[in-house]
Length: 137
Image 1 (cartoon, rainbow, N blue to C red):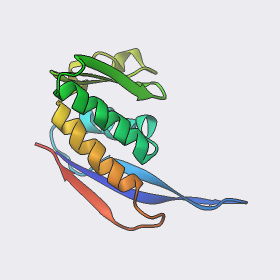
Image 2 (tube, rainbow, N blue to C red):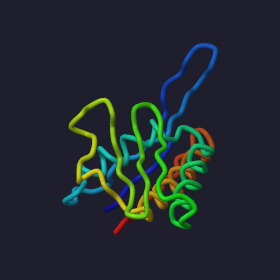
Image 3 (cartoon, helix red, strand yellow):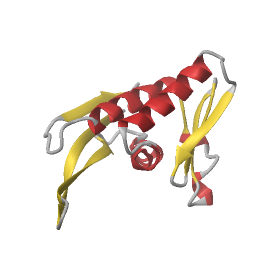
Image 4 (cartoon, rainbow, N blue to C red):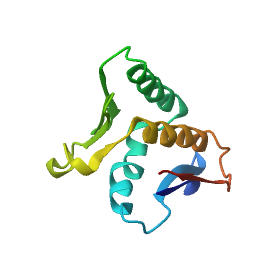
């Protein structure tokens, strides 16, 4: 699976000026593209708006991997990441059909890579035209 992260213009607002936001999208038409778009790309804005949010979630993954904690639930804005040694279950709480689904299960390593690249993207200068490509197994 290939994901693409970049900064996009959000328009010009009076008193604020030009706004930019980070974008995550599936960069291919592979078999699981819809699953990754819904349960990974579309939730990143909800759970990690700033690099420090990524740091918090990465620390949670590390804590689970090191068996410091058996499981951790974290997230925000109607999205929960339920992390355990088995992996990460992504629950989107606004729709009962998007919680507890087998297709919303990912490995800790996948989420680690996603969060590291998302953090990098969030830290890019406003207006940057850099595109980050993440290839997941």
